Image (spheres, rainbow, N blue to C red):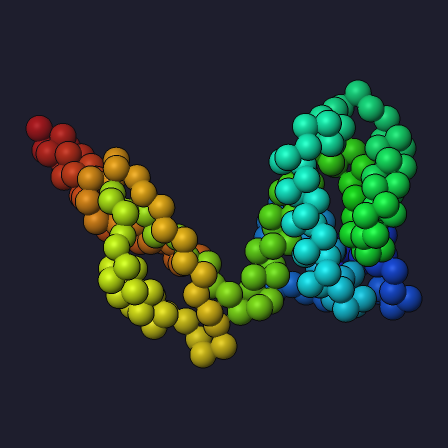
Length: 209
């Protein structure tokens, strides 16, 4: 995103008088959702409402999941943009959302980008996690980790972190791995599963035949 377009987005989202310069998020997220989330981060940072905006968007995201009518309204492509924009501004007023959050919803509606709303919220959450010094880590194993295994794994993974960072570990189970584990921490990815080794040896054998 160019600086000019970025500043235009920030000005559209921000209620601050000084919205000319972008406040860069601590981590870059690519794509259209990344551009909106970056502008939102910059605007909320200028308005000192980062935590408030994150909380409001998380609540709205949950509402979309639990309210079928709201979800249909958001994704319905036949409804006019100005109708969606006005309706969302009304919702924002009724739920006492901050101006920055309200501006985001209105802007997405006006630009016909409400189908990207959840992606924008998720991108913003990634930026906020980095803002708090949180490093997300996902560990996938063939069988559930017991408490001792999880504690040992967390201790080993924390060695990758800086002193001001904290680990946010998510453990998942995938029997297809057979054994071992797959670890994603930050932008690093390590596949230590038995399934990957079997695949590797199968490919080597096939190439030799």
